[in-house]
Image (cartoon, rainbow, N blue to C red; front, side, top):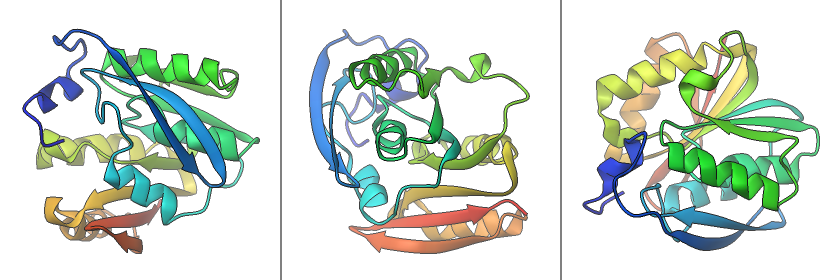
Length: 202
């Protein structure tokens, strides 16, 4: 997220011209061929944080999974491919990301178990067994905290969140903040300057 166009990632309708760029990667023993795109986070690549998250974890159990800030769908579609009993909802403010994620789900034959939506389109009463995310740290601390509190509250009691955050982007302080908000959080992985955090809803 270091290039000058990063603000487009957090826009509902990015202003840059739309161009699809293929991305292929492996997660949990499965190969995935997806389309990324201009104006969407990690165009043309699997970003390092997401790669660390997928490498340092095992797939979740079957259940209802939320992919928060789904982008073109890398995390949520990796889960849907690896866990046949998972139903995944991807959420992103970027309408172009939502389009790409749903197109990728269809191309992988996962459209019945993965759906990407904008936040306003997510049913208000929906709850989730797990939340997975490479959260948008660069939206700012206050906005990030509000985002996490909104969606962590959607976890069922005992539900789990698994997130990856760069150490130099506040991964350790975020862990302490989550603990202070009543969401016990532990570090379950660390690589390439990223922390993988596991949070449990009491």
